[in-house]
Image (cartoon, rainbow, N blue to C red; front, top):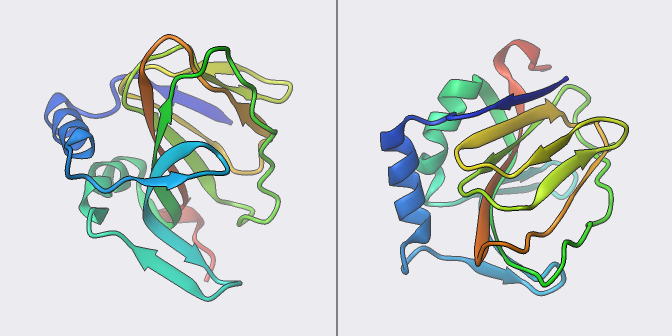
Length: 165
């Protein structure tokens, strides 16, 4: 199931998080391969015995509470600069993720980028909107051309009522 919720965060939470991540002192890291900036908030990879948590983890609190997240597998902010034309990035198929995990994309600003599900809907990047779906659904994302930058929060997680021990 694909779920889109507009005006996901209240104005206070949205403004606070938006101001923090756009602050000149917020630490962004450059991924040369993907040509984007990112900030990992949480990474858990049991195969690599890896656990990492950012000091900015508290920025996830409104998402954890609203989405009823029990366990985060991966959470990161993504900062993309505009491109000259829309680029369709390779299809993402999360076959290795937990069978019952969810993926959410939260959009901090509107632009002409989108996420396209294979044989399903196209979802535009709209400010303060969250897109949630089963991590098993294949999809691809695009770049954007009409704004200087685009900021997205990506979260992969398990829900309280679907946690397997």
